[in-house]
Length: 161
Image 1 (cartoon, rainbow, N blue to C red):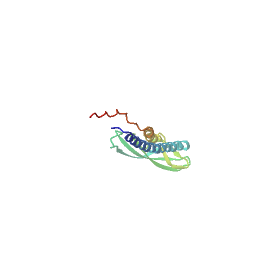
Image 2: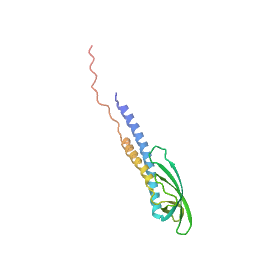
Image 3: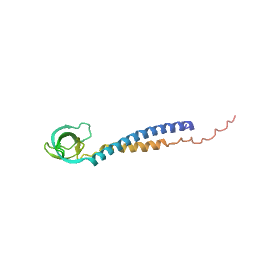
Image 4: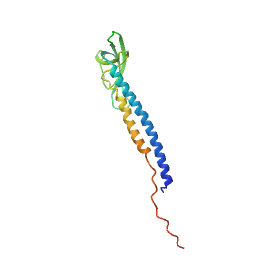
């Protein structure tokens, strides 16, 4: 039987779960914003350049995602000041032959901070941000849940003796 006390307890539990989901969603959303801001900051100050694929290590992706192979590349490049640098980049499902010229972006103040120019820096922000919004929405709905009162019942029938 649904009693007002039971309804209030269920609503209180739902509110606590909602607040917990909202907190997790807020943390994930903050992380997604931080990742996106870092990518925007890097891209706004990065210098475009050319590098060459120097070395490649490939392995089959066995996580069941159907993504094929992962490749880890060592890419060498020369910055505008003539310094020689290299960095490693992992690419999923796309093999680049050794010696192939590639477009890169690097930080002029720290050329070791480089990446392939076509890398999607917002991918992690989307991967984390999308569920974060779902957690926030579900958490907000649960946190606003109110206790349902029990349906009125008929008064007991009089006892005839």
